[in-house]
Length: 540
Image (cartoon, rainbow, N blue to C red; front, side, top):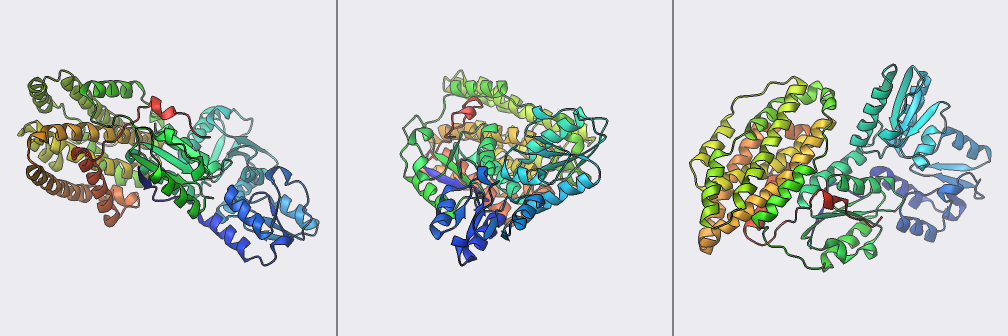
């Protein structure tokens, strides 16, 4: 199997610094680690082999016998530090600076006389530390836990590993249930967590399944697996290579790989090597029939996730400047009627006696029009103008309307491939939940759209010799390069807002083109999981 690694995964700087501090301790037998330094069994075993004493998370109330106590990266309350110091213990503090910042934010909100609402998992060591110095607080794990509090002033902080979308849903629920209250939100989600989650989101359109490596009680690792499943991709949470099961990957050609912030690089490498060596059960990997594509589009339409349109108002002025014109251009590009394309598809369906091809193409066009409707609503809700036309969109339409089916699809799939690059960047360029969810749904659709069209190109090109197909591939690459340049010039504000420079953009665009080329060349056909398949059983 082909393994694709997330571009951000594994140890964060807080965990790396904590382990480095532990490694510098000359007499580890005199030190007790106050809980689990990191939620990773391999790391805990390595520390035990060095001679460290270790408390479990449930035995933190006990006073260690050793003269020194190491505070883990998850941190503790000031009250707990005082208790340990009062018992004569020398403290080695490895609290992550971002966790310490969350503590300070919680105390600042409390100092303003606010009832502090902590978004996080009750009982988690970090959350216990956050609330340890608070008198008036509530812990909320999900939007369903939100209630109306009898307080005029509320303050919200988050466990640092909370997914941003999850935090925003809870924040919205708190505001809805407490309209009487003055509410202040302190964003304490750590950037490494955001980076890893967004890296997974970029990975999802490329992968048939994702393996997430990390400790079974690691909150940030579990969140990564949940994120994959929320986007309809099967995810399997493992601690090591030995946990992998070949049956999980039946029919998979491409497997994504990511890891929690407490996972050793060596463990990630071992899992990657094991995945490449796996021989999953075989399943049909040829092109889907037109009937199968009809069933895919029908299932996809029936399993749409709701888009939180009410959050469009959260678009900041900076985000509006970055995306307004760009979204309007793409809204125009997605809004075509597809009349010429459907006319070509009807002729082709008759020529090859494939009665299901035209219905499949109609459903494809409807999905594109759905994208245009969503983007139009984003513009309308945000009070941003739509546009009547655009030069690059006009060129693409002109080319398609003067070509047969093969060239029409080739021009169309060029835009679809680049759309994967664009919508992934647009999602990373904003914190607006509605726009991020919209981009996620469009990305899932576009992965299937690229396969649908590339498989048909492959069928149409069977009549050509190999040299002729190579010439066509070269000409398509020239068209693609020109379109990619136009996309960068016209939408570079979005890419830059997402932290993507010209070099990174070129690599992403080229990788997407290569993946599509493998489908046309018959070397690989991506399996597109249906939304229902996204709920497949995991290893948890």
